[in-house]
Structures are given as structure tokens and as C-alpha cells.
Amino acid sequence: MSFIHEQRKEQIIRSCIEELAESGFKNLTFKNIAERAKINPSLVSYHFKSKNILLFALLDYIFTHKVHYVEDAISSGKPAMERIEEYIDVSLEHQRSYRSLNIALIEIIFNARTEDNRAFYLLEDDEPDDLYKILISIIEEGIEKKQFNPDIDIRILTRIINGAIDEMILAPENSSESKEYGKVLFSMAKQYLNTEGEK
Amino acid sequence: MSFIHEQRKEQIIRSCIEELAESGFKNLTFKNIAERAKINPSLVSYHFKSKNILLFALLDYIFTHKVHYVEDAISSGKPAMERIEEYIDVSLEHQRSYRSLNIALIEIIFNARTEDNRAFYLLEDDEPDDLYKILISIIEEGIEKKQFNPDIDIRILTRIINGAIDEMILAPENSSESKEYGKVLFSMAKQYLNTEGEK
DNA sequence: TAATATTTTAAACGACTATTCAAATTATTG
DNA sequence: CAATAATTTGAATAGTCGTTTAAAATATTA
Image 1 (cartoon, rainbow over the protein chains, first blue to last red):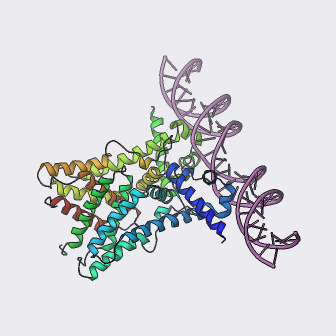
Image 2 (cartoon, rainbow over the protein chains, first blue to last red):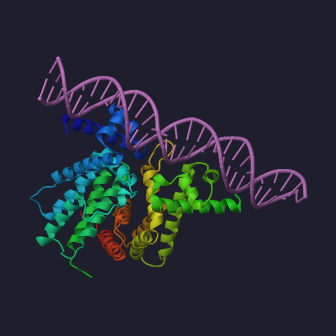
Image 3 (cartoon, rainbow over the protein chains, first blue to last red):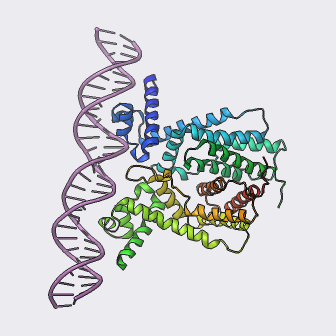
């Protein structure tokens, strides 16, 4: 891998994200990508052997950005409950500050398919993705330190939280509404985490 | 509109839902639709003047089914809180029982675009859709009858609930997990609805 | 500089698409 | 039955796409 190679790949990936955010997946053609990057369409094929390889590189690029962004914003010393609040807040904030990235992510996940025609969004991983892992590890720590009810279902709670966060990207951009949304979501999670195994 | 006309449209719509659920949006071509319906591709064009008209008819068909299903399952006499539980349960149950319909819905919403290239999933309606309206009206009733804290933000709560429900369609099909998911989600909503305007 | 490797281009390939059109078939009506 | 309308077909249109190939340009190495 030469320097030029890596540089070109970065350039192509950024052009793809622009194209996806502005015009959507169906316009993510080698021709359009090349026009944005001011290169020849064949050059995209040269640097990414196939379109799906390009798509996976895009997913990796965007997802890595998101994970690092969330990780960096969560403090290490504070109690688990406060860190959950941070997780929710920074996730919503990332959706606001990096809308293009998140739209591009949605476009790929819900449009792309593997070569044997399985939808990306339905691919079942054996383990949760890295964003889920961040939230899971915080909750596990809270349980270990006897701060949370140990009977809660972690997989379910993290799904509810991430599902509610994802829904907010569909809402018209409105910073104050998004922050209030985070407050409510956290208060709901907090109460669930505190419930004494009532049944 | 003759009888045959309506019959053909139904036949075409059902073929589309099959194709979407099995092979996804990118394979929803007139050729593939026609093959499933055992008719000529041109005939699809004849009954639906354009592909987007067909897509809107599909959305209408699926959404109507979902709304009626949820409406019919919610009892009329019970207290608002119980009806919210019913709403969550029946929504999750619909996702399990009519997976093809829900997959088809996702495929269209996240893939289709208007003629001026706006993504369906980002189209901002001036008012909430009919599913949201069902939930909103229950909550409003609960507030009127002094059963819920009047300070809650209805738009936010309904977004969280529907977002969490939607997330569950991505999970591998597992009936018991889905039911437990509904229990947790309802318990979280219940606690929020009962909170005395603490701040 | 000469030889080699990498990068870039232009052109062409085969396959697929939504839509249109005239002709053929079938159904409906008087 | 005759005449009209509705339905269906097959072919053609004009356009798209990802990928491949050979040649050209550039960079790297010896």
C-alpha cells in the first residue's frame, strides 16, 4: 500500500459520503463518485476491486468515526449512571453534528446487499457491534458495583436505548428538541436500572 | 375502475410484497413483479402509470393493514395505561406475524425517492402518521382524565416508544424475547407517565 | 539514465432498466 | 351478432450500470 493509494482511497471515501448524503444510495455510481473526486470512473474500480468492497470500507470508516467519537466523550471516573447519560447525549449530539455521516450510514445499511443478496440491515452478527459494546460494558460495570438492579435484561435495554436514539435521526433537525429527547430517554432508562426486581 | 382492474392491482401489489420481502427493493423490477404475477411486464405499467405511483400504492396498502391491525387490537373501555401496553404488544406482535409486510415497508421507505430525489424516510410530514396518532390519542386521553402527569412531552415519548419498537424488527425472530422486550418498554413508559413533574 | 512498478485513462462489454407503442386479444355493451 | 372498450402482449426505445482491457502516463527503483 503506497501513500498515493491511501490518499486516493480517502478522497474516494469522502466523495462517497458527500454523494450519499446529498443524493442517496442509488446515485452512488462510479461515474458520480469520480466526478466529485475529479478522477476517472475506472480509477474507483482500480482502488476498490468491487463496489461491495467500497461499501464495506465506507461502513468501516463511518462506524469507526462514530465509535471513537462516543468513546472519547464518555468520562472514565464517573459512576455508571452518569456515563449512560453521557452515552445518550453524545450519541444524539453526533447525529446532529455529523448528519452527513449518519445519513450515509443509513443509506448503505438499508440499501446495500451482499453478493448473495442478503440485506446489510438484516445481517445477524454473532456479537453486538462496537457501539452496543460501549453501552453494555457501562451497564455491566454498574451491575458489578451494585449500582443497578442485577435482574435487568441488558440486551433489551440497550436495544431500546439505541432504537430510540436512531429514531431521532428521522426528526427534523432541532437541537433543543434533541436535547430534551435525551433527557427523557435517560430518565426512563434510569428508572428501569433502579427498579428493585419487582414482579 | 373495472373489477378486473382492481383485481390485477391487488395481484400486482401482493407480488411486489413477496418480491420485496424475498429479494429487496433493487430487485423490485417490472420484469420480476410480472414473473411472480405471471403477467407481462408492460401490464404493470398499464395498471400503475409509473413506478412511484406503484410504490405509493404499496405504502398505502401496507400502512393501512398495520393501522387497522393495531386499532382492532386495542380495547376501548380500558384505562389509558393498559391501552398503551396493548399498543406496544400488538405492534411487536404485528412485526412477528407479518414480517414480510414490515420488511417490504422498510425496503420502500429507506430505498425509494421522489422524482426530485428526496428520500421517503426523510420526508417531513406536517403531522404525525396514523400509527403515531393512535398512541398520541391514548396518551392525551390519559392526561385529560388526570391519569398521567400532564407535563410529559407526548411527541418525545411516542418517538421513543415507536423507535424502540422499530428497532426490534432488526432482531432475529424470537417470540419470547420480543414479548419480554415489550414488557420492559412498557414498564419504562409507565414510570415516565407516572412521574410527578420532578425537576 | 534505464528498467520496472504503479497509477490513470479512454473505450468497450454485456446486462439491465422504466417506459412507450402498435398490434392482438378479450370483455363489455348496444 | 356487431361495435366498442378494456386488457394484454411483444418489440423497441433510450438510457443506465459495474467491470474489464489495453494502452498511456507517471512514479519508483536500480
